[in-house]
Length: 186
Image 1 (cartoon, helix red, strand yellow):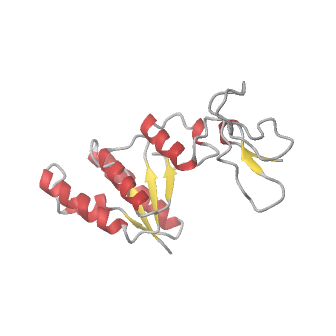
Image 2 (cartoon, one colour):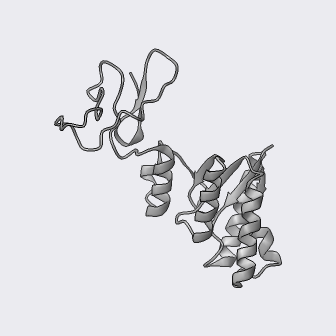
């Protein structure tokens, strides 16, 4: 059982966001993880509308983050507090797991179809998985995108093609991400 940090909105509709955070914790519990949601605990004795209390709660939450194995992010839009938590998790090299507000997991294979997520959250996911909007180059000899983007001169190929995201699976057959992050085995 690992300690999982639940990162979700609190400000705004606090009653609804509190109920949603409880659901997110329950989901982690169902997956046999130990959820920690500082915004559920600290707000029982701190006033989130007070700058001093909010700052104290955020600092304590960021301190707890050090002990977590993963951060599970639940939202459709990122809040200011969530951005601070995610930034700290990245500094600590803690893996991030993404979910929309309805608890559907978002990953590199499906995040383009999740139209409910806002631009800041979409950018965070794209930055975490790599730029999936661009075509990626491929190291296999049969791919038309072989070595795409490796030259600085205009090769007539589409803008944004990269070789950097070729996935090394350890097998003789390379794998790469083609259009929109779909993994293609050659």
